[in-house]
Image (cartoon, rainbow over all chains, first blue to last red; front, side, top):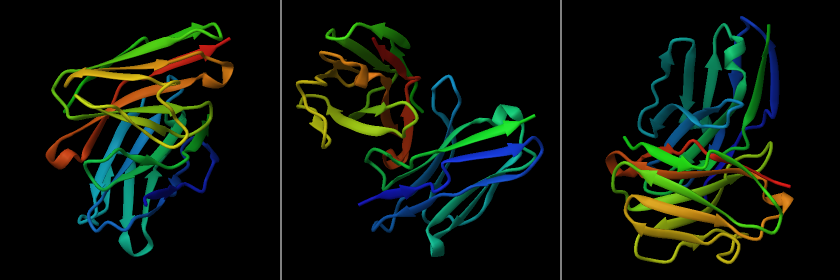
Length: 113
Length: 115
């Protein structure tokens, strides 16, 4: 069975602070894929990243970075120098491939000006 | 990649009525999925819709309440039947694509409010 845990329900930060969103997953599959999505108030899901289980390299994209650690089954997401436009709900998700994604409960991030 | 067009984007419906949501994909896909996202909650899988066969429903969801059609490899509909305020949610369709179906694509969602 697949499970994704996002323990942080809500986080509030002041603009320009760094913030890390935690994601812990459970799976018995040796091959799997991890995802992060952003859901702004408009409701659509915005794809941020997909990482396969064989690639533990950390990734940086602008102000976003992701830390994947198989040893702790974690795939954490850091926003550097947060901005008001980063305010949204962020979902971590998991799939072994060829099956629908299993989502965590999401973390609501509020960035205050 | 796959581009998904979902209609309507939002609707306000009277309780007891039904709403059909359409999902059109710009390429042929084997599996399509329907999710529900209740207010402040995560996405929950309703069912998997395969072309040419009955949809497979997840625990807690039944065909009478959420009938699904999948007439071809690019289109599916989800009907929310006999609606009540508890059905107020965002409904999203999704497909898999890419190598080994490891990429997930989502429609823009249908925001349903039942009054």
